[in-house]
Image 1 (cartoon, rainbow, N blue to C red):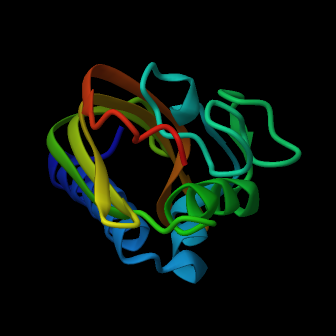
Image 2 (image 1 turned 180 degrees about the vertical axis):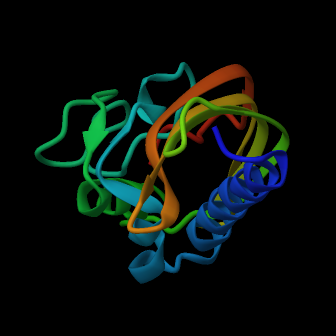
Length: 170
């Protein structure tokens, strides 16, 4: 394995990738969002209890062509799933925070990490503001591709979700 300094630099690069992904998600920078992921990324974030599904049909259903809770594969599909969740038929304002990363380098080109997370989501229906406040952990895997660390796998494990009564009825 590399030197301790190289290992610390790799961990810092992974932290920047994670932070950039959250920023691009919350600012709705969809062109850049995909660039934080490998070509074969798998996201299992919608399988967590209380997860907001991509807007598509009636409450509890997924966007067209997608099974509710199914993993999403590939950066384009992942970007579209996130976009339709936060910037679809009913736009959602979001704030995502990742804290206290536990990052382990598993080889020169792979790593895994667990991040404590908190997210807040809001949208307005008429004069009513609906909201969600979630707590949990992101479980991620990373791979160095083209000289850059990227996210190759993500699973969201929610520990608690507080939501307004109509949040899931979008």
